Image 1 (cartoon, one colour):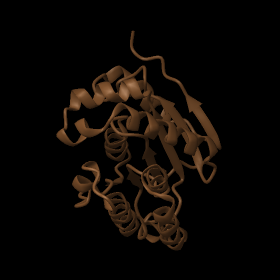
Image 2: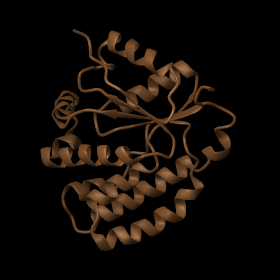
Image 3: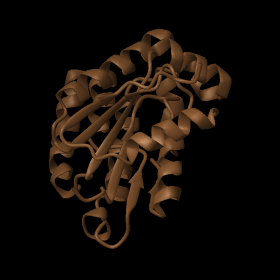
Length: 211
């Protein structure tokens, strides 16, 4: 089995997906693509303004499409690590949009989706909402302080539901609740050792963490 050349890392906020993507890209000498985060509608969305959720979601959809669509050709030339999966856009659409808004959103998603190439491997990082909240508090970003415990739990549950059914590519599910590979070198090296092993179909990895 050949090593994956196009890897997508996914998971909810503060699970460590961007950190892992950076580490993987450096070790693979791969190109790193980071999810577009400059969304002018997020402030209005967090403030609960009517229609802001739809505007924010459509902005994310278009920007993610613009970034990932060229990979169908370019991935053949250079190994690539991306810190998100295009399909994740739907997770937040189903959480944040009304039925009427979702119907419009889905028309655009289905139009754009066939033009996005699939990764060779998806790495899904899990953590409990309680662990995610602790990491958010440690990071202490002003924008994340507006995220309620209820919403954070809903997002974590939606991710689990999505990846429970996911079968488009090889998938490695890693529970990070008991480890901190960002701050702990031993946790990182054990995780990287697992990532050198092949993944076929859907596989699960439950690291025990450093005592």
